[in-house]
Image (tube, rainbow, N blue to C red; front, side):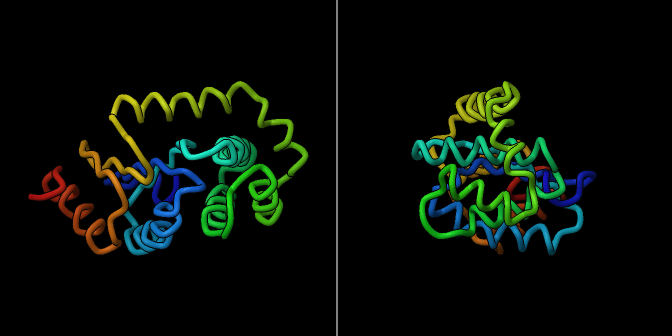
Length: 166
């Protein structure tokens, strides 16, 4: 969870660390969080593109388990980086965020990591999400990235009338 934990609108993002569209959407999501003090963003790892995506997602869940306050810095470093996300890049991003890398190496085998990723996969299947990024805003699915301005308008509409368009 990023942004305001008591926000009056929740945006859920399903993403893959190797998704080019997710990488481009990172700055838009960052701007939404910065400009909307009543927005809560829930990030759901959905590693569907490669084995490296699964490795990176496992590290990400272990990062969150270790220190939720540093997750956003880790997420921005890994998703904002160039090249394929994999175990090595994810561990480097964790180290850069000031996390205990040796503990993360142990924690990636924790059953909670498997359960977290399985839950994201089950939610994605239930919502019929076929790719990343995908968003849930209010009770509406938004497949694919939306530019910051269009997402901000949709968030305002959900806040006003509970729908993407009032």
